[in-house]
Image (cartoon, rainbow, N blue to C red; front, side, top):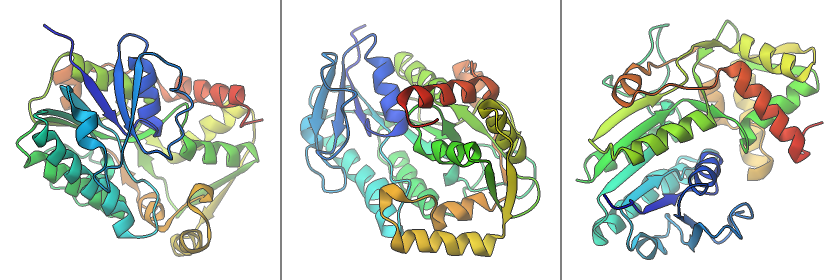
Length: 324
């Protein structure tokens, strides 16, 4: 069987960086990035072929797909001020990619979706893949529309609905780590909140497993580490790994939404701490889903507990000089 030629879209993002660097340890990989993307990590690596384009404006996609067998679609807009900012990247960008795949006779796609597509649980019963999605954020709604496009595209696909991912290169968890490192632990709303997590290397290993086993049977899977976490315990574990004591500050949801609004209006994109869209998600009590299907069908066995993963994440950030 010949080696499958892979194109990664969204390689400059958090998961994309970890994925490309892992694949490039063993084989050649092609990536499609914007001309403005920070890809210093990839330059000089002979196994990484860098092509430039833009999903939103439909530039360079067809050229990047020539000779490709499989597309791994990691590109996403996770922070934005309006619905249309999310739509242009997450939905329209996916539509342009699908169209270009058809034009170049590329038939297989792995789409990195999100738990946000489904929305939170109404109780402590974890969500499953067959349940009707009820997204509550712009991000979740536009990712759901992208899923619909892929499902109806005629392509052979696997959709991975990842829960909250953490690990090296993740700017979102770094924000929380820095706050906890300063001794402050802000929490939106009141009452105990529950969620799933997954360490980035476990997610990367699952993506690679799907590609290497050619598992493109029009399947949808939740991806998490198999555990359910109370948000308080996550914050306590981060503080413990930092050797810091922290003061938990509960911020009423209405006030948090107002702070998110101020961030949306007055703070430039790369400086935002939080947005209204993210606050909508953080205010919910249960973000839980079952990974039973992917464990059964893909024999997925996560290697990282949160205790291990957060220690490695903090160590990595300290090595990079961004955390004291």
